[in-house]
Length: 79
Image (cartoon, rainbow, N blue to C red; front, side):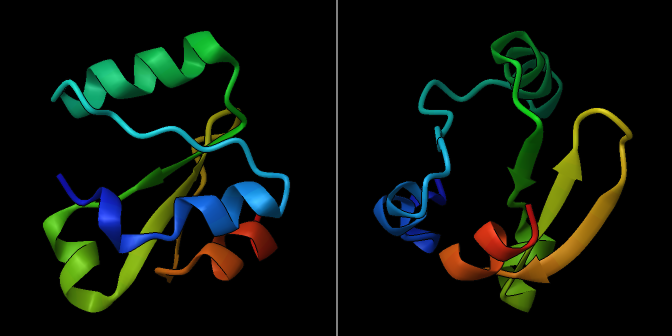
């Protein structure tokens, strides 16, 4: 689990609803769950992103992906 890589509380303090997968679902299952919750964006953290110090911000409506720095402030700014 990579949940320690982002300061989730700092993200929430900026008004962003943030959840992490703690049950080990596949990426497909996580995206389906995010869609069910009505999420507008998701943050994808894979090994490639982590090694680069980045994350992928995915717009759920359009499928547009953007690689951004791995920080709460960067995520909040790019929503």
